[in-house]
Amino acid sequence: MPAESPARAAREAFANWVEEHPGGRLFGQVLVRREGAGYSIRHVDDRERTGLKVYEDPRSAREIARLTADGQHRPLKSSPNLWRGWEIRVVDRAALAVAMNYLYPAGIVHWYLLREGSLPVTHFRENAARQSGIYERVRDLSDAAVRDAVRACCADEVCLKRVMWDVDRDVPLGVERGSGEIPCPEPCSLFVSFARRVRLFEREERYADEAGLTPSEREDLAALVEAAASGEIRFAREAEFEKPVNERRMRYRRLTLVPKLLRSG
Ligand code: SF4
Image (tube, rainbow, N blue to C red; front, side):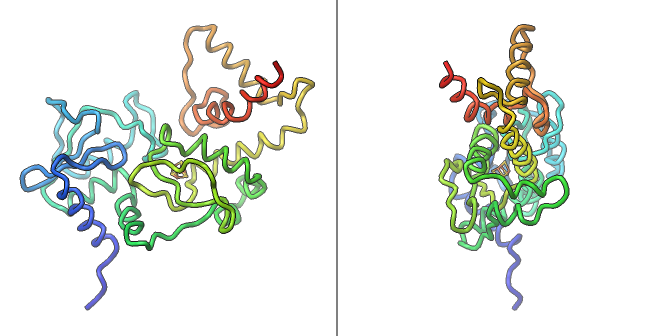
């Protein structure tokens, strides 16, 4: 008899896990509940809300996952920026898996493999060694910068996955990994892009001025003052790390620039 495929086994295990808990299960940013003979999926903050827009096709999850509430593209499906006001009602386990895979691609298979103790993990250095072109230099990132990049890019405030990889096979990550149900088995492309920006920041240290500030740190401070003075601070898009007022870039500055400013005071 052929072995059961991981996707099918994951689908069954996930549905069983949901059914074990009458109040539903939190997975990423959605609440999944048994509802009659089928399942209901909604934004967790809509737990008690009525009058939601109901979708009965599991593929509607693709549209729901595509944009934020203010119409911006969501490059990272595990970001906690799903819009609210919808409910997906599906009739069976297969449809539940389809909807979940649009909301969190590969999420339930990774969740299942982790529970089974067979999730393959690729550490940062292994991933970096495979990069080419403009991303090749991420392999030069220091261990400390990898850790700061994870704090800035992967924490629960900005990504609901739990980091399973380390800096390298024998170099532990040593930072908060997140608390969600969905494991992250390998640095994603958004992280690699952010790591590239952090590498540029590291290289700039040689051009620091007498106050110890690098050109991009000065640029970020100026942009923040300008934005605050205009009374409207608008974040750049999620993956626009080249722009000063990007959330992850600001989170990185909090780790590296703020201590510098406080020291020089
Ligand atoms: S690498 Fe970080 S940002 Fe990317 S999916 Fe994993 S935890 Fe989230």
